[in-house]
Image (cartoon, rainbow, N blue to C red; front, side, top):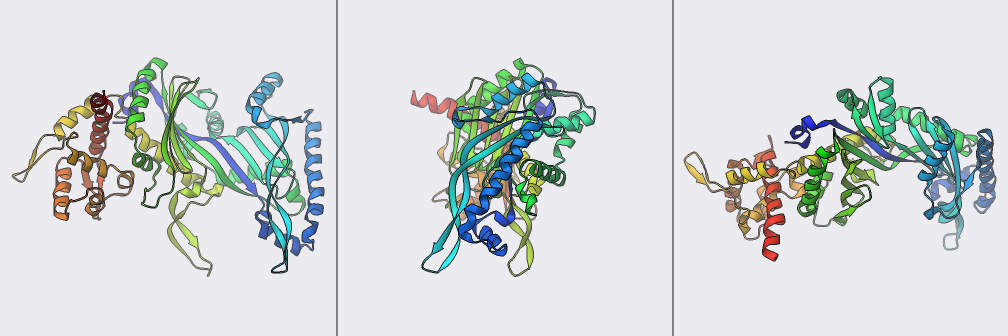
Length: 501
């Protein structure tokens, strides 16, 4: 039983939507050194004239920023020590002082690292071209409040290839949609505390319109980064970093506090690397090089636990004492593999599993992936706050059962052989993708195929696994997940400390 069902009388509801979104804009013709080299040659520009070609473009960006600042009565604020300066705090202060609710709020400028190119002549081949380089250039941060997207910023560099960085928060977008539907809500910072029509809100949060977002981003780019349009070029928009939050909105702080304390304490001891892989829909293979782990820390605002696997992570924390948030974060969405059309160099195409495209047009599919990850985590932790149900079922599963006049002994978490079996079937890759006997035998040295068949029969009779229709694979049942979670909790929180004390 999910927490949301168990405590239905103590919560307003549950809502999932995008949180922090960072989108990158790049010019395809300038996106890498070879493309930029080709562009310059096609336009009759000498490779070693690259600095001379770039300087007027820099001036164009600077003049545009100064013009916008002047039109809006804003003084561009230069940040000397970027790492010691909190732009968000400064922006909130400016908003409080000016009372602005829409339009340009403030402009920052700062010297930051940027990817660029430099002319190069290869004496071996006799070819002249541009190669990748890193340097520092002036960047502008345009902070503005958009009517639909809320508080955003666009970071604009003053040197080619003019890669843009756009920030927005999905909670602000959902708030705008709720306003249009005249649905009442209470909101603090980036979290909803209460929504009057939760079902409609869920439907609105699921609706991602990449086409509309693309048009809005193009409009921002034309205003704040004028160089591409002046040269007849345009931007392509990709997802750089994204967060998807599932919030359980409790009616009172005193309802959430005892539940959260128990859940987070148990998760620290119980969640294993294979569980993390399960939550995130990833596989752990023998050649997996991704770092997997769990971090726990205490903040001023409360406690947080974070599980990570490579460029993907999932964390749990409380917001304002009354919202339990489960949040998936991804720094490279191509980590996820999906069924999609793949174009080949010979002009053919087919449908196969391939990395998710980084384009903003993958946002809807990505939302489904991250939301599912959050709910897998919610399902896992739902047995943590009250172990009585799991413990009773542990007693039941430890007893022998009969089927067709044959007796099958129960499972004992304190028996090393049974524990090895239960830990093996709960590995992340099997909980997500299913398992066969040969898979489990890899983790159980000395177990023969016939013995594995008998083990699977025991698991099935006790309701811990079930066959996937039309396949030779099995999945752990909801009962199996609850039993294993409760068993591991008792083992790690009670037995192990007792043996080591």
